Length: 173
Image (cartoon, rainbow, N blue to C red; front, side):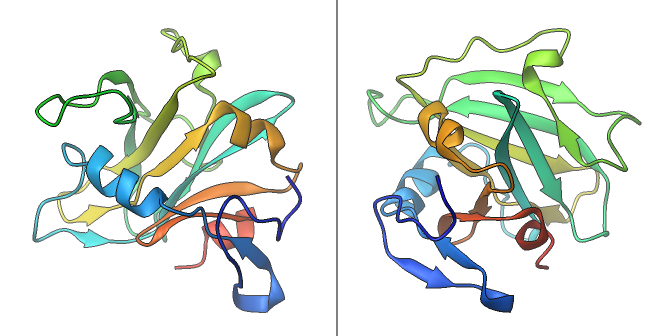
């Protein structure tokens, strides 16, 4: 997917002239889909979680704006096909430990317990900071959306939905 291309929503400009696409309707899906994952009141939303493709592999990237290290990455299936009283199925939780503190990326397929992702399903992934007062917004994605991203593109989670940007936009704190 080339940057600035619409992903079912409107195209807007972000700082520095970079164009990003708003994914229409994702805000509602993420809000509902993360109901069990969203930080409770008292948490400050900082930084971002994103996904990108690296040689065909799904890569989770994040920036916590330098405030706290990310302790874990959590992935859930989205709400499609679920009843109102059903929770999003957890796909996996991976502890980051000391790894990836500098790179701020995680490749789920390289984990000891890699997830089995269904191309027909949507997913929500979130990087979870180690502290108790910060929350990075999760990002809703499908494998097709990730496959369509250009080599420098990142699908970013934001409070108002998901956007296509770059690693530089990821650090827009």
